[in-house]
Image (cartoon, rainbow, N blue to C red; front, side):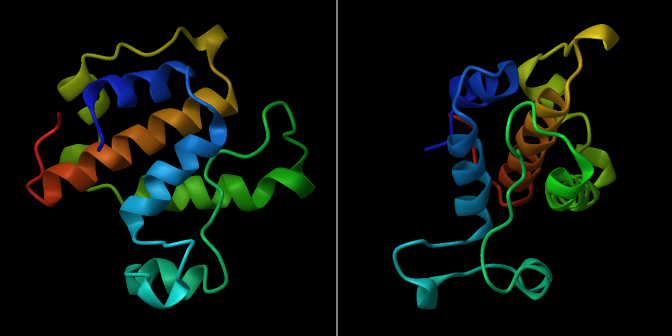
Length: 129
């Protein structure tokens, strides 16, 4: 289950990157043990028909040729959040973010993922534990 503690740990960078991807991908409907049971929304499955996208990438490897698919995926994820839900990380979790000089692609992507998860929970009427 998705909890407040888990989401804060993701935002703060205290969880492994693969776990961050697993949380958002599972909520999106991807199933790794049986692709036939996937319940991925058509908007995502049409863009990523072969596999769930990577929303985090590899820490410290931001060369454009390697990082572009990740950057595009997280931008799409961010754009899929309803405007009224764009500040959920701050509003629901009280997360204040980082100073400008502390920002990294990894931290920014984690914030987008957490905001998307909170948007998903809110739009599906799911309480945060």
